[in-house]
Image (cartoon, rainbow, N blue to C red; front, side, top):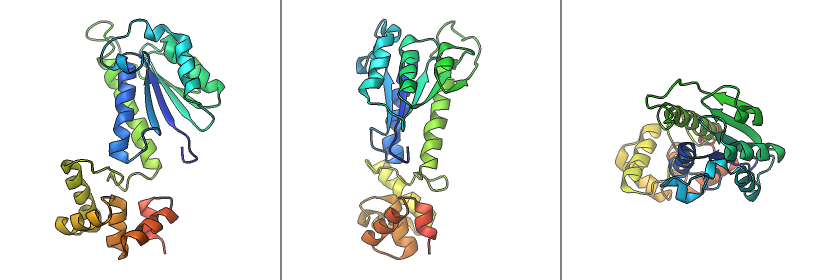
Length: 240
């Protein structure tokens, strides 16, 4: 991803909805472009709110969506299926692997077609559901936890956090503006009103505001310093 690759989740039914949910949280939380982490659900957007019968059985559609995304060697594709057998998901992962992408199969069974199709299998065995066959329950919960781990660790490794602060947060509403100001205050030890003032002068960019305060520079110099260090806050603060 540091070289321009993307993270694509592919699922059907509940697994597909979880894929779209986790992907959709990355832009506001980590300031990513919407194309960087994508969630793909069998049946398209309509399947987010209403079941599209037979969509998970359409293997050709799964392969086609990967071709349509122009997946290549820099990309990572995570197939998600509670049973590990959904033809749409298995075909998508097989196609992605043929195109050279890194592939992962996330399932709640062992020894599944999805595991065999992927480079790496993540098998989370949750046991029988409380309501038999309703994989939106334990399996869905487990899948969401794994997707949280994948996206969060990826963002941390990409330099989109500083300590436990989400310094690439997009302050798109009043709650997030307050949160961004508190992040600047907590990192720098500056009082919140002053942190908010600098944050506004930094175009509401947390990293820029922190560098401005910690390095005693203006917004343009702070942005240049971040750019020189791959937009990673730690190196920008601690470089000579």
